[in-house]
Image 1 (tube, one colour):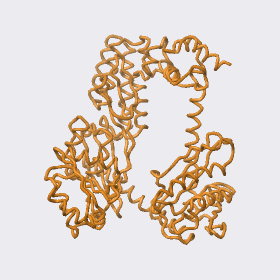
Image 2 (tube, helix red, strand yellow):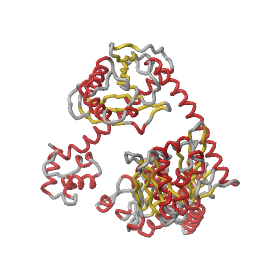
Image 3 (cartoon, helix red, strand yellow):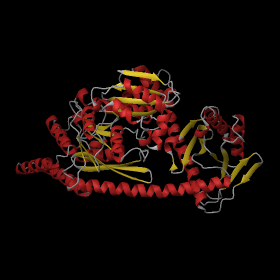
Image 4 (cartoon, helix red, strand yellow):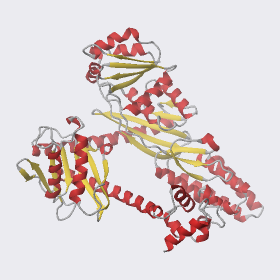
Length: 623
């Protein structure tokens, strides 16, 4: 049951004290809101009344939490049946609401899994997103920490187990083996080149490999090889031998195989200087399949490491299933409730442990060493970024620079025009603040007009934001002409020459990009001035890096936009081909290039296309 009250007192402390008698002693989740209704904090509690009582004792609270309490004007509580249920609700609310005072974790990527389908003739492929194993008997392995790890796994599975990877539509319409059969990467079950029982045995062997049952698999293959040799079936014996050799070589090459962690995620947390770093190692099938660094934002004076680890794990697994074991360098707060919650969401028993001896402890220690090294490196780098931004602020005669934006344009003769906006701060490039723009008003070469559109849109958004969210510096990749466009747009928006207005800079390339020969123009009400930045100074290379990142980001977006337009437009131009027919063509052939190269009879085989439309498509590409 939820309840919501409005504060009538002058500060949040008095409001919370007045609320205490009405709070339940049950487990649940609470939200603190300010006078504008924005969520300040989301927390879970075993006992809601006892937890909120702690906020009414300001002398025991850190400065940051005391500030939050005095901003609080509303309290919303939701009772739950168990603490584990409260923990799940808390993680989902933090992820969706992104409260100001909570630990934040920028980890919204959906990890990739390997799936062997439950079809009569199973196929193996990658899968991103929720696992739907119960729909038709698919078997999932993972998730893996990166797409690269999945593609390496799929490549190995193709070479060793030769399962099909084609779509069901392609499989159903094959009349002869594809190129993968000739390359010995598929046994061509589509045209009966392998007996169904033999293909089923290959599928079983592939699942054993992905489940980490390699000792059992190797023993089975050894028996198969010996039996085939005894019966003089030398080709079958050689195939088993090659499979044994490939699996053994992979195990030896990986150098990171452990039988003690068949399916586990290992996390090591280190903190220093108010920053936190978490190193993750991922084990699937007993093999180390990848690693990832996380940089949670937290308040060192208010959250202990155990609480930080708890919230991190809850947020991390809010969007992906947990493995059977979660191994940490320290026990998270409320570990039992967290394990119960992860067991509920993943559908399997999840164990959380913090080993102190043995092979697991050694693996955790290695992860912790990596985390400490990464954190030390980042602290060093962020110190340099901070120093250079301070130097730039001194040249511009302004206060601290916490946000610097740089914009660049990318197009080909005005076509597929896009713009990038990257952001840098005291700790380096802040990719979560990057923005992309599709140019809508120009399709002919005119960089000034394109920049005018981008900056008009940017300033229109800025005037809706509080000044503390504005960048202190706006940098445009271009010389005086581009900078004048920026000035014009700032003036039109009323953000020029005011106390909080951004400083406007333009960067003109030197004789050779990357040589530190750039000229930086600073716009002031008195005109444009060249900033006296020394040749090959650390500051010029930081600014150069920001400019190059804007250029890279713009080109990447431009190429993606161009590829999308080119791949879709040709089919859109064909009379009679709407979204349904276009989808049927792409599903059948796989690409526009394949449709263009198809014969008339092949086009007629497309389900739902018909002979008349097949002739139109064929004539369009041949004309």
